[in-house]
Amino acid sequence: MKYLLNLSFNKTSKEYLEKIQKELSRKYRINKFLPSLYIHLQTIETNNQDKLFQEIEEFFNPYKYFKAYLDAIAVFENPNKIISALIIDKGYLSRIERQIGDNLLQKGFNVSEPVNRWGLNILLCSNVNLDKKVNFKEYEANFKTCKKDYVNKYLTIESAELLKYNSGKRDNLVKRFKFKEY
Image (cartoon, rainbow, N blue to C red):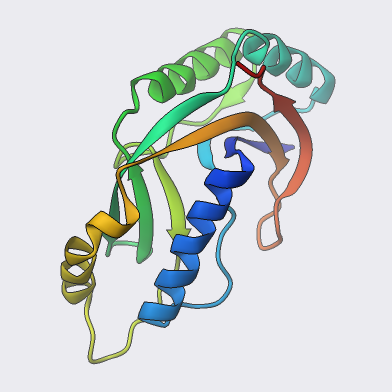
């Protein structure tokens, strides 16, 4: 069975990101089916679900709520035509991503390589259907002019979520690992 391990935001951060999604969707006529908001850490393949729950629970047990700094909104033309929010202050997040991957590999789980080629990001819109008149260069120019509206904000991360991966269907939440409050 394949699982996705993601970090999820608190209510106010989610509302802020949803507001950005809706503005982008309305302003650039992007499709109405917007993706879920999270930071993807790992993709794990295993048959032993109980052992996986126990290892992830042990790993995230000492963690408290923490913040991630939203730096910019970026447009990636190839290959999927996506719009993402980039996180600049990613030292803590990349450490978590690296340590959880190493920890699960040592315990015998099949962990895929991280897909964060552009750094850690939050997927805002995917499979953007462009008008034939408009190209991605114009989208990027528009994002640079309105950059101040969307960025320079701290987002609070409150939990880790383990989702069952179903290709073609919506991801199903299997278990949530809540972090401690301050």
